Image 1 (cartoon, rainbow, N blue to C red):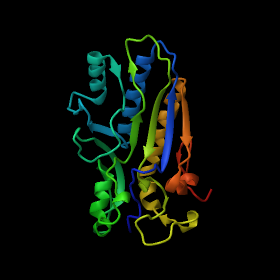
Image 2 (cartoon, rainbow, N blue to C red):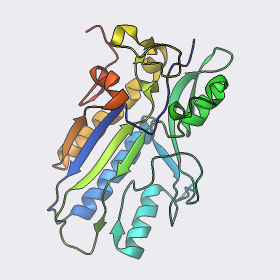
Image 3 (cartoon, helix red, strand yellow):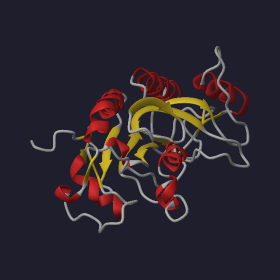
Length: 255
């Protein structure tokens, strides 16, 4: 079996946008609940677990100190609450390094399918496809398996928020999809699903967990009175638009 999947920072293969309502006297409690339940669902489904973040004041997880503890501590010190405000990369930087784990399946060099917690899916791909490294780094970007971004922050001293709070969930790797374009292969880009490479053996193992995670967050957003939107992929990501929707990734392509 071959690893035909890739990673990229240029576009998202799938993108869900979350909007939480602006005027809410309990916005702090809502955001803390949102963050807690996202983290809880991510760990429950083994798709998203934060151990470390980069930035001016980075987070480092310990046995008794979670990312939520860190946010509350920062909020109490600065008056600002900014959930999921770290960058989307996984490589070390001047501001530190993000270490965000998700469990996925891949084929190792011995042609064995393994399921492991991975923090840098692009670095893993570089190790699995060393012959492609020099000319294909755009498709081996160092990113987590799942990217969650907080696109705004609030001053908790304010009683209400005048603008909505935005969050996004993005897939920067197509390892989650049952069919992949094969951007690392020496072939023409596919024109439809029938010309794409089969990745169903991997996707069938880890993508159901991703879909359960997404549906948990969808239900949470509805409960908080927010909006959940599937953003149709653009650029090269448009090849994947028929395989994803409001609630996740479609694995049964014969329906």
